[in-house]
Image (tube, rainbow, N blue to C red; front, top):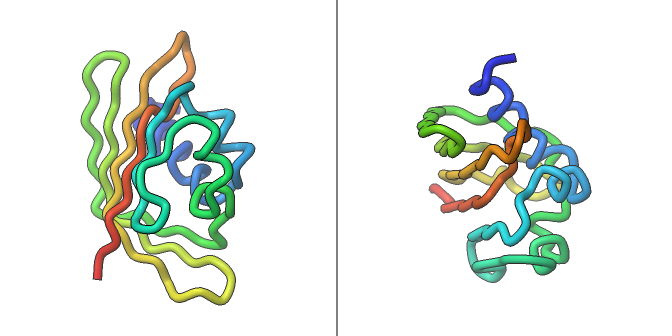
Length: 115
């Protein structure tokens, strides 16, 4: 699998596989930025927050962009996600990954709701 395919696959798993999977693929001291009320999260607070801990039923990522410099890669995309009986969630997202040995770990993630 190419680096690009690996990163996009990992990004989709963050949305669909739940908190434990996300925790296993996240760098220590990662920083996530979510819409209000969650805000900026780091450390253990990442895994207590409902926005991170819950799985999404379906996720469609479009307008995908990848930028890579050595062991750092940034993804940018538009997401449309569904969970339970809630309205579809549309957002612009970025995630930054760092390669630690042979493993890509998420170092940051940010979501901006789009309308």
